[in-house]
Amino acid sequence: MNFFEDIKIGQRRELGSFTFTADSIKKFAAEFDPQRFHLDEEEGRKSLFGGLAASGWHVASACMKLLVQEGQRLAKEAAARGESVAAFGPSPGFRELRWIRPVLAGDTISFATEVRSLRPSSSKPKWAVLEARHTGTNQRSELVFSVLATAFVPRRNDMAEPGKRVPR
Amino acid sequence: MLCFEDFKPGHLGRFGPRRITREEILAFAAEFDPQPMHLDEEAASRSMLKGLSGSGWHLCSIIMRMMFDGFIGRTASLGSPGVNELRWLAPLRPGDEVTLDIEVTEVRVSRSRPTTGIVTFKAVASNAAGQALCEMVSPIIVQRRDDIALGQAGR
Image (cartoon, rainbow over all chains, first blue to last red; front, side, top):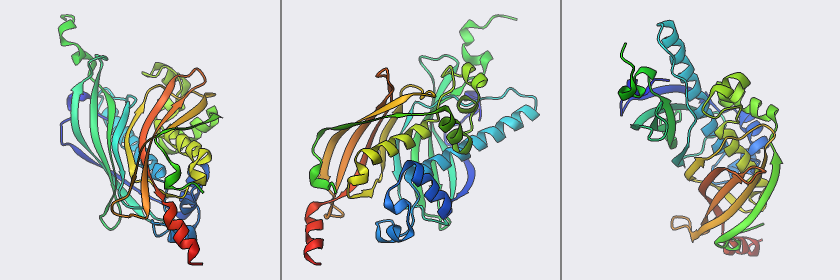
């Protein structure tokens, strides 16, 4: 996780990968999305997905998991350099979420994120609003998941309101 | 089973309430969204959300489950291509009783797969105080009745 001032439009980060085992697909589905094609191999084969398929919300949640991991890795690095650590702000939402291809049992999805737009928040002076496209690609290099997500990112305190800076 | 033809634009139903426990919030966050604002009371109180809150993706998953229990479980659903837009409007808190309102906004027959239709709905999840927590617009693909009738005639 970086501060507003460190982020450039077009910046891309690879977030690592997540393997969807049959067990993890069924466990998530049993709790949150018990549609038959997420719970049973045979039902999955008979469905449009062609196999036991992960719930789309499982895929999105795995993407979030890797985003948080990456943020925590960056924070640790910043702390090790003695720099101040930027913490995630909450997200106001997302749009254009696409489950492009099914994620089937055994698939390994590599996630990445790319900065699309960035602007200071008009209502929260310590924050900026970031828009990023997160994507997931399977082991055959096929795009399976895409979402345009919005998040609050912190501004460096001493630069948040330059007009109000107290002369040292 | 509800088919494409059973969905008409307008209010489809109100589902829940479903009570979300602190344990559920912590378990989801630990697995998928381990940010301090979702895991740690002290850090959460200093966050923009001013107190422990559930992951937005947890709320999405809860909405999915409530839609399943409400109508998708008895719908000839073939899955969803995505979500047009989703807004997290207020934090999900431990103990919240979540109610889900579903409105069908658009129905159309699929051009690429004419035995199916696309039902687009707007879902609004609210807490017991009536405050909207999340709003989502999303299509699902639903089998058409004609196709089911044809399938049965062939047996």
